[in-house]
Amino acid sequence: MARVVVDVMLKPEILDPQGQAVANALPRLGVNDVSSVRIGRRIEIEFDGEPDLDRAREIADKLLANPVIEDYTVRVADAAEVA
Amino acid sequence: MRIGVVTFPGSLDDGDAARAARLAGAEAVRLWHGDPDLHGVDAVVLPGGFSYGDYLRCGAIARFAPVMESIIDAARGGLPVLGICNGFQVLCEAHLLPGALTRNQHLHFRNRDQWLKVEATNTAWTNGFTPGQEILIPVKNGEGCYVADPATLDRLEAEGRVIARYINGNPNGSQRDIAGITNEAGNVVGIMPHPEHAVEALTGPSLDGLGFFTSVLRALAGSSAAGSQAGGQQ
Image (cartoon, rainbow over all chains, first blue to last red; front, top):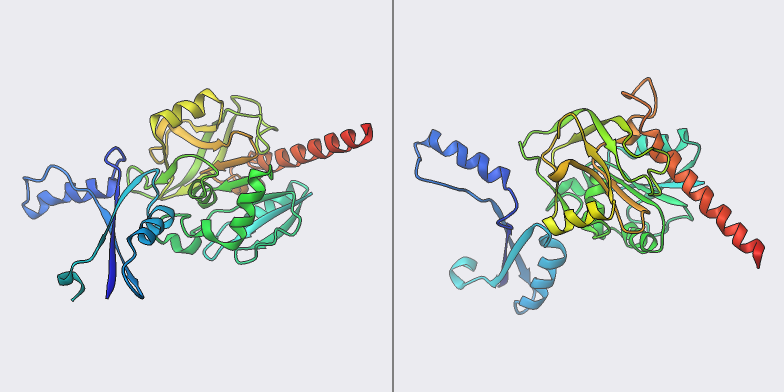
């Protein structure tokens, strides 16, 4: 299968209130050594033929991420992920 | 004058926006997200709601609706466009307005009557207000926190493109208390609170919202008068 994985994260300078809420909940689990949590999004795209990173980058830039507030990375899934 | 109101799957406030347009004296024309034809409208309102279920990001999928391709072209040509709440998010996603709207800083949905101070009154949608005028209209959002990089915020302020700021409390953490902005030409305006819910004493906290709709009618009357005047000189 021709899977491309796109990871979208808020830019470091953009406040992530969801991540903060999760970080603030961690002490309730007894976890006290975490200084920060940031929440992003993982998107898996299946191409019919060969994985096309350029097309995936275009999709990410136009739709999957908002470059005003988010950064993204694009990579071909490795065999272990696809299995 | 004909004001188009777009309905996306998940729009909520299209009915109220159409009603506000009628109360202001316009003919309201309903536009469908899947139909690229703008049916000759003189202005467009993108209403509040949760277009496409807010999937991916608020407004991200609506931006690619067939009707939006037509609206983006027409807006670049000067068509007055007002985006309210989800409509503001759509305008930012479509790059007709700078910046983005993110999750409220405190994570809570906010639903209350909100005081605003109007700033820029040289736009198609705010020319009926006076600079510094304080107005009361409802705000209701979960992702209304306006963000942009500091250079963009500085430019918006230097160019007088902030149309309204929150006063007596910022409901969502928006940077510099920004509630609404306009594009360089002043024909495209986005605002997070809801003027269409403040157009009648029975249902709203004030009639202040009506000013947005009467403003665009005045702008359109002015531009058509200027047009016929120019025609007469030929």
